Length: 437
Ligand SMILES: *Cc1c(COP(=O)(O)O)cnc(C)c1O
Image (tube, rainbow, N blue to C red):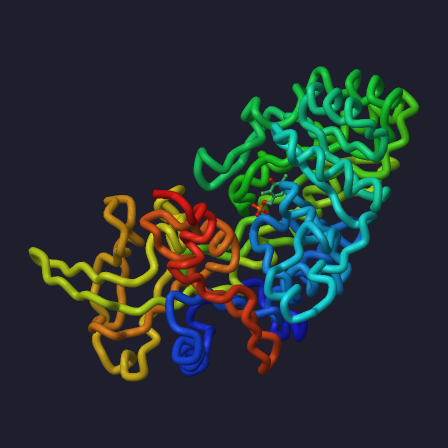
């Protein structure tokens, strides 16, 4: 192992977290609690930037929009890829994203402090309201790039008087993903058809500044399906050369995100250098700069979700362990059959024998389960840590069952900052008009 690998390992496993620190955080902030370590986010970014030194790295903010995460990555030099007007407002605009607590405390500027020229907005069937906000923000931040995946979206932007920077999202016709619901590359919903892309790009130059081409194959580039990634990149290289030969000057070719992380302890981490080499080779010679958009890769293993055992029920020859977190806290298992490692981090857990149990949440839905896990024999009151929860964890949390969303804290060295306070039941009902019978 090289010194660099020791300082910045390719993966942080659930076993690497200090049980003692996690217990202290749960004592101070209650459970369920999302915990995210900013140092690990920075390490992940540096590994990515080192593997792709010639590329622009845009963080796909939808994986985790906590303000300290956006700030830390922007400070490291990342651009930000936004999926909605809400994400744009968080990144760019103080007024749109003004937090009530900031306003009350007289704190200024809740923006993540990212320059408009470092921000891409990827518009997928964008609602009118999103386009209105994006066009207004582009007025203040002319460096903003809007990534468009349908001819209709170009027309809708032109109708709003937009004539700024456009990137054309292309449907590469190849998809990758750990589950069919996250393989977007071959789904007609995403991007303009590949055969129409060169003409559309050329036509668009009459109304906009066409600066890039984009494709995103979905999530889960792993060692095994590098061939799908290669195929996508090579098609984008061909297209870029065709577009460049039509005298459209492209600044960048964005080949999307989807860099996988190991969710199971026996899975190997992605060999980023191999992915980068394959990407370079498949892209071939283009004048434009390569861009990548990792989301999960930068934040997944930087986060854990802490939850308390409230019920241990013997059933047949197994046991069901009931915990406070459920599908409303961490939706991925219910949505994608995703596996998340679990560990009993209670003080005396290490002395107990392991036992296979089914872990389930508090929601009255059979999908509300985290599956079967080997855990140090769980007892009521134990604290469990759920691994790889930094990506698409808090972001997908919702209030189904009138359940307030959990708190989230961010670790920065020894510092602990509350990124999201725990919601109350009053927060859940706050949007209802008071005079309703
Ligand atoms: C979600 C998304 C990403 C990030 O995907 P990850 O699997 O988290 O890396 C990148 N680009 C686009 C357009 C996306 O929608």
